[in-house]
Structures are given as C-alpha cells and as structure tokens.
Image (cartoon, rainbow, N blue to C red; front, top):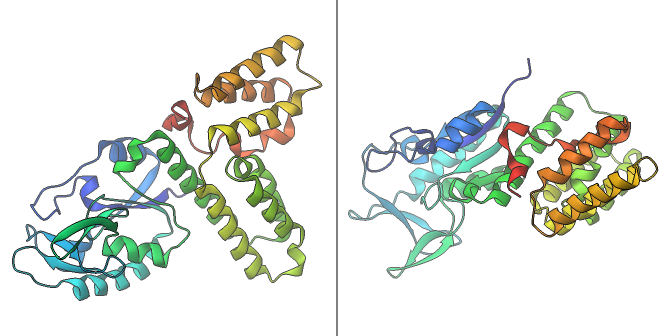
Length: 315
C-alpha cells in the first residue's frame, strides 16, 4: 500500500485550540475533503516556540524584509525565540517528506502573503509570518498556500496539482532513477507541463536530451527545479485550450465528422468560459478509451489528481 501524501498544515486549521485566544480556526474543507487524501503534519509555531495558551496577541513591526515579532500590550520582543524554533523545526520537517504546506492567513508567524507589518504605528500588508518565511527559504520548491486563498478555484486547483506533481517526483526519485526513467517521467508529463508553460517544457526537453552530459545529481536537481517552477505558473484558459487542441490532433484520422464537430464545440465552449475544463476532458478521455490511444493513456494531464476532488469542475 502506498504511503499517504504528507502536507503540513497550521494546527489551528485542523481544529486544534492553539490560537492566542484559546480558540481555533477549523477549516472543514481541509479536514473533511483534503483529509481523505493527505496525512496532515500540524504545526503551531507560537505554541511550538514555548508560548502559552491563551497568550497575548502579537504583531510584526519594523522593516517588512526583516520584521520583529512584538507582543501588543507588554511590548516584549519574541523574534529570537521564534527564530530559534523556526531553525530547528524546518530541519525536523525534512523527515516528514512534505509535499505541500497550508498556512493560516494573516498570522504573524504563519501568514504567507500580505501579513500586516507595523512601522511607526501604521500597518502595511507587506510581510510574511516568521515561520512561513523560514519554511519557504528552507524548502524553496515546496508547494505552499494559505487556507483563505484555497476558496479561489483556480488557486486551489493549481496548488493541489503541484502537491500531487511533487509527490510523483518524489516517488520517481525513490526508485533509483536513471536517464531512461527521467525520459519516461518527462514524456508522461508533457501535456501537463505544456498547460503551464510551453517555454519551460522546451527547456526541460533540451535538458533531458543532453542528460548524459551532466552529473546525475545535477541533472535531477535542475529538472526538479524547472518542473516545479513550471507547475507554479497558472494554466490559463488560453494555455489549456491549446493543449486540448493538441490532444484533438491525435484523433484527426479516426474521429468521424460528427465527433470532430462535437469535440471542437465543447473545446470552444470551454475557451469561451461557458463550460468548465472537465467537460472537454471527459469527452477526450472517452475518445482515448474508444480509439485505444496508447500515448495519451500515459499522459498525467488527463488525471493529475483524484477525480473526487472535482478540481477541474470549477476552472
């Protein structure tokens, strides 16, 4: 049985009563929906660094590039205490084989984007929580997101696609990968990468073609970097439409005229944002089975994440 995919999550989002006021911010989508597919690794930096529950609220102050973590009322500087925890925790998390992390938005320790930083008493939304920033520095390719942004269908699909993509890469690395295996991995991910960036797909193709000219460790590290950077770029409607038309080309000699017209019609509906991506993909997968298209059967693009998550029903 394959081990579950591990993702880190701010502990309060899992319903743990660890917030400064003794409460939580239980996110049912994370626990009830994502919990069916992932093993959660909860982290609360504030409790982890030794602060009590409940505790005085805190905020970031000073230089947004290097803010201080200050208690609001007693004016105690908790920066070094938090930094010590962060430095230790990110190393410990290496053992968890994380494939993603979901942070609590707005938190001075765990917020990822637009966290308030106060300068001369005036806030600007320009910072990151101290733990979130430390984790991103330590794991620069790890898919990360905030729970609030997961309400956006496109951001949610992109994040989870990256998580499953990163997991597939880690599984590939565990299998003592050789150049032939990398060629197969790259070929299987062709359409998925193209849906994010044709330019990066071409660069990666050149890399794989010259694989024997590089040291194995350098080759795999470079490919991983380009693979994850490609998936970070959002697959827009225009990019997806180009890939759908590319797939249609594999059937040009076998589809009947009526089938061609039907397929082109649903692709155009998606292009005009009158139907979600799942509509043309469902018809294409039907033709893959009907006409036994072996090459397309190997394409991760057609099923990059569990259908039960319904991610492509809303993009």
